[in-house]
Structure formats: C-alpha cells, structure tokens
Image (cartoon, rainbow, N blue to C red; front, side):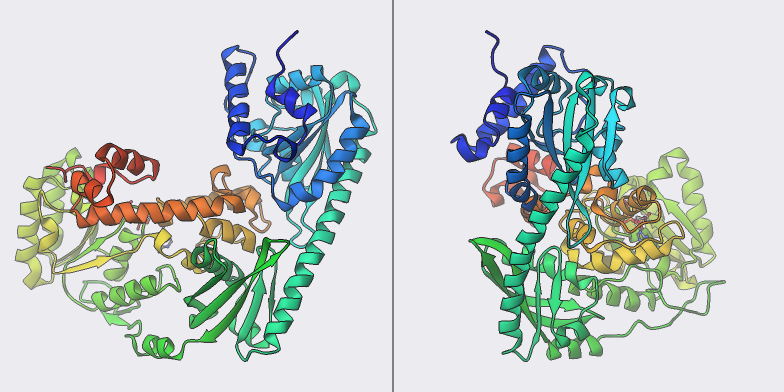
Length: 602
Ligand SMILES: Nc1ncnc2c1ncn2[C@@H]1O[C@H](COP(=O)(O)OP(=O)(O)OP(=O)(O)O)[C@@H](O)[C@H]1O
C-alpha cells in the first residue's frame, strides 16, 4: 500500500484545524515536509520558484464565510474528478478539498497545494492569479496554462468580492484533469462564489450593525468628534467629519493597531485632517469575543495647536549662492508629513537654509538626504560630488571640489562617510579656507560614527532625517505627494492599500517607497492602486501586521543599543542581554546594515 501523503490526509480531513488536535506548527511542518520530500524525489517540475508561505490564515472572514459553501460543494463532488481550491487575495492557496486520490497526487506533484501562491507574476496564466488580475471568472484549460506542469488540468476560478470595499478578497477554483473537463464547472464555481459573498454580506451586516449601535450610543452622549471604524469602513459624527480627511481612515486604523496592540483601550496624541493635533481615546469593539472594530473619540489638542502655530514658519530665504534664485522656499520640494518628528525636521531644514554654514545631513539610506542637501542650497548646487565615486580618479575629484569652493560656490558631497581618510583632511582644509568667500559644503552621510576620520565634527551644523518606519502616519501624506509628483504616477491609492503600506518597516525608506509606488502604478495601469498591484512581498495581509510592528520595535531597540554603544557590537549585545552571535543574526534578519557599523568593534 502506498504511503498516504499529507495532502491526501487533508482531503480526507478537510479542515485539520477544526477536527485534528494537531497544532498549527505541526500542520505547517507537514506541508513543508511534503514539499521538500517531493522536491527531493524530483517530481516537482517548475514549482521551485513559486512563493511558498506556510502561514495560512484560517480564521479570516473569507474562510469563515467559505467553509459551509465548500463543505457542501465537497460533499457534492466527493469521489469525483474535481478538486475545490480556495485562495486569498494574494493568490495564495489556503485550502484544497475533495477529488479522488489520483487527482490529489497529481496536484501534490504540481504544487497546487496550500501555502503556494499562484499570482500571475510567478505562475503566468492560471485559474487563480488570472482571476485576480482580470477581476472576473475564468476557465484555463490544458496548454492555456503558462506552467507546463499545470497543462494536464482544467481550472475554473471565480473572484470572491468584499461587498463593502468591492475589492477581491479571494478566489474559489475548481480543478479537474483535462479529460474530466465539464461545461458545468463555470456555473458551479460562479454560484458558489456568489454564495460566499452573500454570507460575507450577512456576517458584515451583523458586525457593522453592532458597530453602528456602539457608535450611536457614544455619539449621543459625547461632545467630541466620534468615529467608529474597522479595516473596511468608517462612520463619523458631524464634528469628526469636519475634522477628518479621507486618508485619515488609514491613519486612525494604523494608530490604533500600533497603540492598542492586543489590549482593549488606547490613548494618545496624533495629527489628523489638515495637520490638526488631537487627543484620541480608542476602545475595542467585540462581537462573539472577536475584535470587529474600534470606537474613537477625538478632541482637538489646543495647547499643541498653539505650539505649532508659534513654531518658525517656512520662511523665504535669501541665498548667497551665485546665480541662485533670490528667494526660495527650501521646503517646497520636500515630502510633507504630519508626524511630530518630521514636522521638527522640516522646521530645522527651514532654519538651516537661512544660514551661510556648511551642513552635514545624516540619516539612513534613502531618507532623502541628497534631496534635502540640494534644497538647502536653493535646489541649485554649484556641483554634486559623490564620495563613493572618488576611487575612480581621486585627483580629479578633489580638484573639482577645490574649483567650486575657491569660487565661493555651494558643493554638495553625498556619502561623505565613504571618503578615504587622506582626502578628508584636504576637503576640510578647502572648506575652512573658502568659508570667508562664501564657499560651503552640504554633505550627506549614512553612518553616524566618524571614528576613523571624524570629518563630521568639522561641520558647524548637523541635520538628522528620521527613518520612514519612525513615522508611519506620514505615509498618508507622502504617498499622494509621490503619486502627484510624476506624470506617470497619477493614480489614487485605496485606503486598504495605504493601511498595508503603513504596517511595513521600510528599511529602504523613501527610495523603497518610491520604487513600490512606481511598480504598483505600472501594474494598475490607470486604475486606483489596490493591494494586488503592489509587488508581491509588500502585500502584507492583516494577520501579518502585528509581526511587522513587533519587528519594527525589535529593530528600533537594536539600533538604539548600537547607537548608545557607539556601534560596539559586544557592548550592544551585553546591553540587550543577548549573545554577540545572536545580535549579528538579528541584525541580518532585520535588515540592519552590518557594514554601517563594521569599523566600530575596534
Ligand atoms: N523630495 C523628494 N521628492 C521625491 N522623491 C524623493 C524625495 N526625497 C527622496 N525621494 C525618493 O527617495 C530616493 C532617495 O533620495 P535621496 O537620494 O535624497 O536619499 P539619500 O538619503 O541621499 O540616499 P542614500 O544615502 O542611500 O544615497 C530618491 O531617488 C527618490 O526616489
């Protein structure tokens, strides 16, 4: 007798999580083992490059609504030549049921199995990913499949659409062997997908009804702006609707997720609408012990509003640069943002632009240091030299710097922390000699330590740009700014997409965000940017948000320890109470640039 594969076991026990006492981890390792075993025996052809994620979200609204429908369909198809496949909005298969053992084995070999993603970009035309791209039911048969190992099947998929947001939250698919293809497959799948949507609507109505009741109970008693929201919708009273802008749905949802965590209550300050500082109090709303949304009261924070009003405005600054415009707003081309940390950085940039001093702009890679450096000299530096390119011709590099500074020009030097030590002395000497004639260097640096050259100490003014992950609420302002900034990026972004982006860590900062938006805009081809338009690895589903927030906190803690220990890894590890090897491993896993700190262990 042949050994039962994990997938056969799952077909026999359709929902292991419900009847099988095995833990999620055990079920996950089963899937991985099966995949590895298949790979080792060489039966997988062309599936190695399919994204595989063993974390299957079995508690989502999609699964809850789809289970009874699939149960019935599975009983109907039992022993027949067709299998039912349920996938999420990322085209990742969540479940597979029914179909005889021969078909199950064939699907195992082709990796049409839970955990694998059939997004079109990885799998080409198929009955799951192509449904998401086309937003309609589709039959893909035999050689119409892009991947060779799928060409033995016929797949019919239909989208499952969230009735409130109109976005696709999943795909229901029925797959059979090519020889078993039936014309009835399409109406069967479409009817089942509609039934799942009806169930979603009924379930949502109950949730939304309860949220509305809670909202009315509070709004009737409160003089504050009252809002109730979940990921899909938001209800506001008149005061809140005056205060909030459309992007604030995502801002409030993100703030709640960060501040409340797994608790029931959160309190804090944030900016909403047109930069209005508010004090917020949020309370979780539950139904059947599950969180279904939050109720938030917002009160305008008048003390903070006064403080912002008193802060130096963004002045028009007269520049000494030869040929520069007489008056220039240094903040004009810089990204907006409502966070306190970015507001402070903008004020410092505005003040610094008014000084005739050399400036060092620091920050992580991609935080926009070069853009800020150029803004500080009216957007018209006399020259821009990259210290990372100095090796090509050091003599020509330093001679160009000398020409600019001797003429009293404004030189932007990017990545000055990469300048070889011998050239640091020459550049500083030039900077000091030319200062009286108006010569000025605006430099950028990523590394915060300057233990080797200490070149940073010679700059009278230093500006630091915060990382994007320190101010996720700013994405609500930066995304439209970047989308508006280029003629090719004129689309709007759906609130759910913005929410997903806010939950990410952004190690590449603005550069990474710009890349993601450009890729999404190309993929969206003129329609509003939805989750499925983002590059695959950026489509964090809701279930992944907490780990993203945790990772962010862990990264912050490690960066803090490295910074306080002046980059010395042993001291940083001691500070954190972990082994140095663990610190290295965590740094790699969290994308902390080791090179940035690698001269600091001496
Ligand atoms: N003001 C801005 N307007 C539009 N895009 C911006 C702006 N600032 C930054 N970006 C985006 O971020 C990218 C990186 O910006 P910039 O080169 O200024 O960063 P940096 O901090 O100097 O990076 P690195 O240190 O890695 O060289 C830009 O190429 C652009 O895509």
